[in-house]
Image (cartoon, rainbow, N blue to C red; front, top):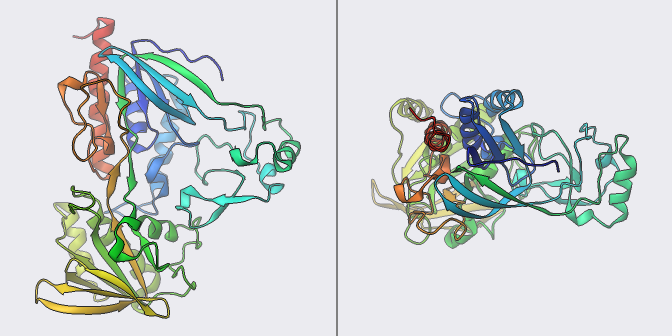
Length: 427
């Protein structure tokens, strides 16, 4: 790759999701030089995997398109994908950051024509769709991916398929000689915005996620609704493709639990309320939704959304922590527990179960300078001993998209203050 120039007046942003994009763009539009690193082949993060936002139920492609337009227009930001930070050393105003660059095997000549994919037959689990469908070994990460450039899976390198992909490209974009590289960057401030991952539902053994195909997670359900997703936008049972007539949504699946995640992930209640509207919109009276909850945490304008959902006669709320899920035959699931409002035991049968899994931090351990404060939940605390390492968005706490963007803007302002001090321009 071409030379990367960074100085102690450069702000490094790690993570190209909505928080990283926001932080990088806010700093760059204030005239600061910004390096934006993304571990995967495209920016967009978890927002790129959503079907709709709440509470307006608009499509995330709108917000992402605006951010990408800003990114393309701003020369103060340099985006580097396939880049993973391996260590951060130094102190406020003078950090050395080591970065591993993984090969894409496709250069900037790529026009995203797809000819390489046409000659490749090997398929792999599609991470963008949480493994619910396959992708080719030569692939575009998803329809709105930026950079709009294909990727060759490393498993193809050295095979006849890789050679066929190279021969099929009319633009000389396939480079099979690409290799792993490393960068050593000197920067003044680091904004860490690597986002979150869904909690591993298989760890919640009583719910049988790894045993029953008709127990899925809320992020998988979200992908199911996307027209580009595994079912082409149709709500279906994974076991047989049938349209469900009864869906159970289980709240706090792994959150607020001493055996799993201690914290409240904040987005789960609203995500489920939103997803009941998907059911109502697509299946109307043909399907009933039941929400099993400890309590619904919805405030301010979000409460208006909750009250609207509660008016739907096809949505029922059961105040209960589901004890376990067992097979009921024909692919159906039987939920066992106690309704804590009436203290009645139940064994309720549903066609499909959706687990509202929580947000787990992706902040890595052991790569930051000694003294960097990472709390018991794995998030970067706002602490003076962190120097100029700032958590942004869901690297600082479990946040929804709106609050994550606000938090990222605040992180950008703090980083700007640091590089202004370095440059001697702070007022």
